Length: 175
Image 1: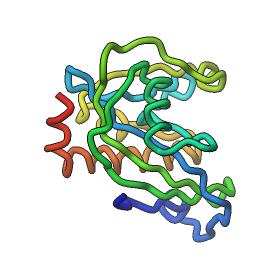
Image 2: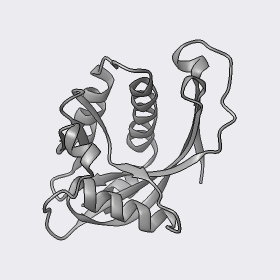
Image 3: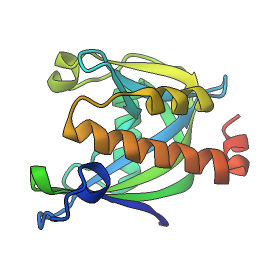
């Protein structure tokens, strides 16, 4: 999968130190519905949006993980249309590294109930469906309140910009 970016403290705080932690593996999907809107997780407590996704469980492959995450956080099944790319994060302040793999997908069947974790429920997580250009605008307008939110905002902008710029053909398949 094509590497879209490596984000480090240099990009966020100007720091030059790097974490040596083993990477967490995670997946995300830009999921389009029949109205050409994409799913964004909205965390009400933090007033923050992000692309649907999360960590890969032990023994899970990437495709199984992203389909599970979409069911949990967007309340629907999906078909993977294309690979978007990967983003590597190195957060020295948290002693944390992460490899994230991004996919383009479309909703299959009806949207239903979210299956959120206790942590997501306490963060007041919901799903919002927006046109991709509006989703990018919303994420760009965020004023991150935490170190972690700066990383999330930066990677989401990179990924949504990539989809808009280089995945027009695949986006057509989502209709």
